[in-house]
Image (tube, rainbow, N blue to C red; front, side, top):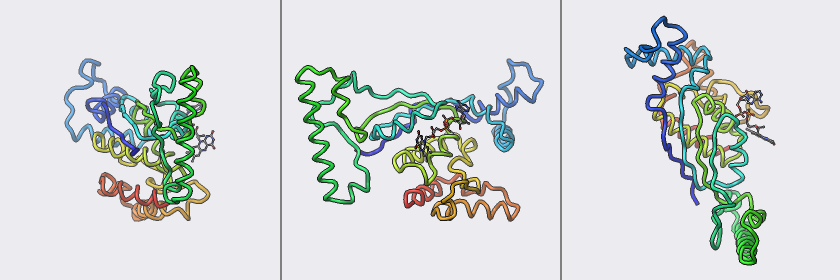
Length: 260
Ligand SMILES: Cc1cc2nc3c(=O)[nH]c(=O)nc-3n(C[C@H](O)[C@H](O)[C@H](O)COP(=O)(O)OP(=O)(O)OC[C@H]3O[C@@H](n4cnc5c(N)ncnc54)[C@H](O)[C@@H]3O)c2cc1C
């Protein structure tokens, strides 16, 4: 089953929401008019001001809701560790699987026909046990103890832009596990389309020109992504070259990350 990620809903104008929250800090306007009279350019300037100053509580006045399917329970175990995001996951208590449950096959297993054949046989055997247990009257909440980390699941995620920045920082890194990294890049692409100025430097720390991981210098992504950013900084240029908002470059980053 393939990963599917959709942006189910989001704040109507996330960048304006951030700019308006920030304006309340710096402007004597009454609260009734705090959201009035913005030009697009003014919104962009205010967003850049708070983003570059690290005044990121302003980013919390936004909301993005994603629908995700075609991922494993191994992924969602990691995902739900992010404490500022909200989740609703398909229940294995209330939704009984009929027949063979869907499962995710890691590429490293798929690449080895001998290993894959054993993996598929194991999944079939687990499904057989699960169905027999249900037929024998075992409650689904107990039969599910036999289901593996590979079992496919579906989850709804809601987060504000600041929580997403934290998530992207950790989970688009080459050191993150491949499946959650694939999810993080898919989510990043979606939010960049609706709020490019909020997510202009979103991603692993190498997107911002540094890496604290011990294996950083050998990381192919560090070479591809971080060095050009560091070079721009050394040359006294803005870190945000035009390439920073390009979907194509994000896709290249993903390719580099996946290669790692
Ligand atoms: C490469 C990688 C390997 C990992 N390996 C393991 C592993 O082997 N075992 C394991 O158990 N987990 C592992 N994790 C999960 C990791 O420990 C975190 O639970 C997960 O990444 C969530 O990140 P977080 O705790 O920084 O922040 P989040 O929960 O996403 O919160 C974001 C930020 O909010 C702040 N914050 C949130 N809660 C608190 C708090 N209570 N007090 C103070 N500040 C807070 C922190 O600044 C935090 O960075 C791994 C993660 C990665 C990326």
